[in-house]
Image (cartoon, rainbow, N blue to C red; front, top):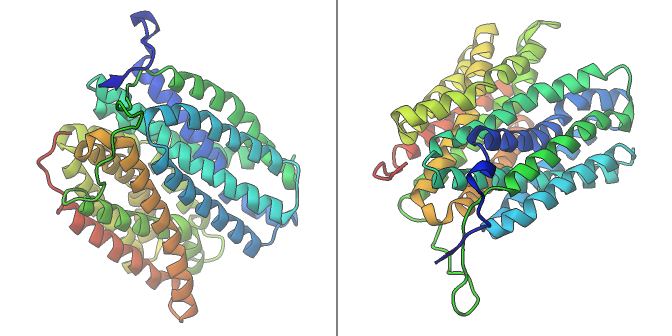
Length: 400
């Protein structure tokens, strides 16, 4: 027996693409204006004297930790009625923490707010796509679900543009105002649209309790989890250190020192559409295996040819694939466990968040042990190779 949210008349039924737009804008808010905007902001905050480079790195780590905790919380709050309550709450947390950042230069306050902003990011990044996927499944259009991640790619460019466009007019804590002012209307509009979705929730039994969840780990899902762990560890190294690698391997002032990040961002924008389309055409699992292979070749290119050609290939191939890994894996997980899609999505994102923290940590110890940044990219190659192997172990006999 299921409890259905209040029904909508045909005239008030949300449109498919309007819903995808709403979800994409929420991801733009929490990922682009929450997480990614700190990357282009950091050099300016250091120049303003608000933080030092090591302090900025520590603040970024706190944000990553918050993201991991948010994804873990989403495992607990995975039912539809949880999402309806938690999604607006954590979007409000994003807005409040960003507002506080516009008012303080205190390092402890900055780190605490970036941690809490990361928690909000983790919850919203799980819950918004999961709710939309469940809604699309009911309408027989799960093949469209990956389009919501276009918001992440556009968020990379929007955040960069906001920072560079206000670089000379703002300083210190003031630099957070553009992110806040853009977040408010986008978060409000997206929240209103998603709360209007008519998605059923499992009803409690006669004792007032919800039916117990089935185990998330089984013969079908374990290879998928291990594959996704390889993806998280493999992609985070170039997406964190590629500009630094370019500065070490190329002459001073070479355009690729900054250009590698721009190339990755540009290739990220159409990636969600591309892999969503390929998944619909050839099947999500085949598309995922192809995705891993291309991403692996991208990191390998930087490792074996750390000149302009290898760096451009790495930026383009990793930028065009990592969001595809996310959307294909989450959709496959939902197909493997259709009765607990949001819960499985949360568990996968939590694992992905953990491996994203492990990658820079391993690199730090590798460098301290005398290794080079270039050779550290071998960790990414090995992780993606293992991810590809485990992707071939995921059973193919499921309905998309």
